[in-house]
Length: 413
Image 1 (tube, rainbow, N blue to C red):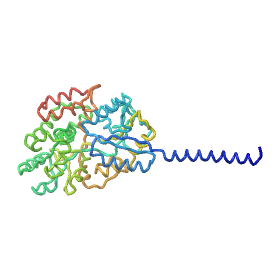
Image 2 (cartoon, one colour; image 1 turned 90 degrees about the vertical axis):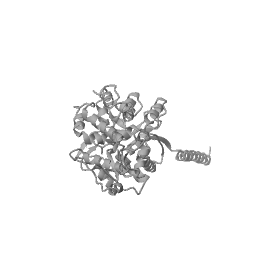
Image 3 (cartoon, helix red, strand yellow; image 1 turned 180 degrees about the horizontal axis):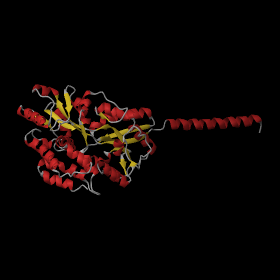
Image 4 (cartoon, rainbow, N blue to C red; image 1 turned 135 degrees about the vertical axis):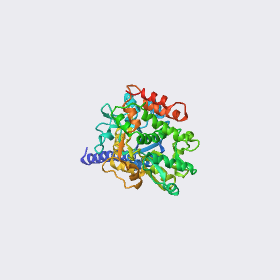
C-alpha cells in the first residue's frame, strides 16, 4: 500500500471517529434533565417552595423539579400509601421528630440517611434535634422558629379604644368588649386539629407556664389541673360566643380568611401564617402579640421548623441529595423567612419585618405542648396521633376535659 493510500485511510478513520464523537456529544448535550418530584404538606408554604425550587433549577440546569401541594389532614395517609407502593416522591416534607411518623418511616427503610451528606453547619442543636432518629439525620433542618401568636386588626381595636392586653384578665376583658359590640372576637377553625393546637398552646402558655417548664423537665402529668383549666378556658370561650357561630364547622382556611376579611377582630395561629393575611387582604392593618400571663409576662412557644426527607428508593440519589443540600442552605432558608414573614432561627438568616418583631416580643420562652406529648410518649404509644384525631371531639362535646386528658396521660411514660 502506498504512503498516499495509508494517509488517506488514516484521514477517513479520524473523520469517522470525530463524527461519532461529535454526534455523541451532541446527543449528551441534548439529554433531558433529570426530573425530581417534591411533596409539600400545606398550601401556605407553596410560595417559598416555588421560589426556592426555581432558584435551584437555575443553578442546576441538569435537574428539573416538580412539586405537589397536599392538604395537612390527608398528607401522611397519602404519603404512606405511596411509600407502601414503592412510588413515593423523591423528596417530601415531614415534621421530623415532632411526631412518630418520621421514626416509623426510618423503621420501614423509606428515608435516606443524610448524616454527613448535606451541609448543616449553621444549625443549632435544637434545630437538628428535629431531624435526628437513633443518632442519624433523616431530613433537612429548618431555619425558622415556628411560634404562635394572636393576630389582631388594629383598626378594629382603635374603633373601640382597645390596646394590647396587659395581663390575662385584660385579654378576657377585650374579648368581652368585642362580643358586646357585635364583633366576633376570635376566628377559629374548630374542625381542624392543627388549628386547635396552635390556638390551645398560647392559652396554656399564658395560664400555666410553670406547668410547661415542669413538663419539659419530665416532672408533670397531662392530667394536671392546670392543663385541664386551659382546656376548659378554650371551651368556655366557645360557649360565650367568642368564636362566633358555627366555628366547629370551620377549617384553617376559613379561619384565616375570616380574619383577613375583617369578619373577626383577632385570630390565634402559627407565625408562618402572617403573610397569608397580607395576601388575602393587602389593606389589612394587622398587629400581633402573645397572650400575657396573669402577672403580665408574655410567653413565646418555641418550636423549630423542619424540612424534607429524601426517599430511600429514589431513582436519582445524587440529584436528590443536591436538592436537599440546597434546601438546607442559608440562601434557601432566607427565601422562606422573607416570603412567610417568619421568625429566623439561625445566624445569617434575618428579617426586618415589623410584624415579626411584634410576634417575637416576649419575656419567657416555653416548650410546645405537642412536643411534650411526643418526647414523653411510652414505647409504642402515639399520644400525638391521639391528640390529632380526638381534640375535635373534645370541642364538640364527645369527650369531657377529664376524659380527654386521662386518655392523653395514659400514653405517656
